[in-house]
Image 1 (cartoon, helix red, strand yellow):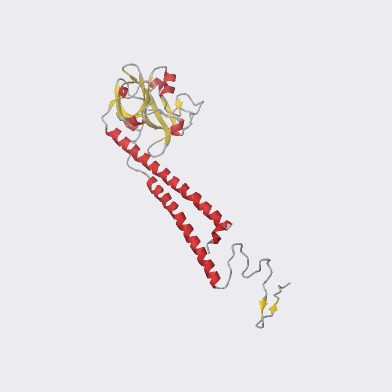
Image 2: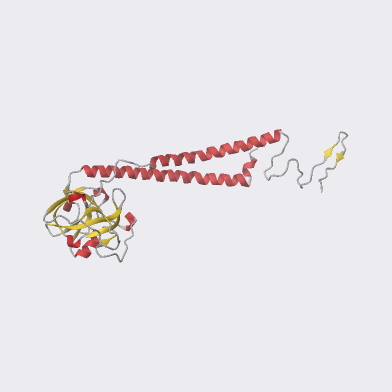
Length: 288
């Protein structure tokens, strides 16, 4: 009764099921790994935000690539702001999703080197080619505290580094690009300023990164694995139902064929002969 499994319909169904099982298992592991990365990132952020602040010079230098282990480390820097080389970073959103720009101001350290400071968010100008209204940076020597971040790249951020932008406007925060524009040594990465707070609340300082939520990746992983387990179960249920239907058809005196032929038809498609009680045959004819 299980010979129907060799029919074309069931062979195709079986192949599809065999392809779905490993695919769903792999999708489950993909979501599981995303869950693990999120948990690891949350732990890293929390640990680095708890750590005591250190001078930025201890963690970075000109041309230095900030390692992931130092992301969000609390750092300090003392110097004077160089507003003449200040730029804005286009198409950045505020904490309530308003589109504007980040203000990137070089801070000249006591040894003459520079560290970039992201002072926060400001609304964009009415015309995108115009420079937005940026509150001036504090004058004189100032000590800035904040979170250390790595240079932005298109690959990591997904933001295209557009060319031909208006003067003093950029798409990405890059210490190398700013070093070329300024003509001085710039420490790798930049500081997201948290202290001191800007007068009047502008620029709006960047909020602390979320490190509490873990998302639904684990739930998605379990769902994919349940789907994978459900495929063979569903296949068995369908096969047993097909077998039962065929058995019921045989018990009723009908023949269930794999090619959909009519019940009791002869192999050549002609109607079978009926017999009388005396054994003589009556030739069945089809209506014309």
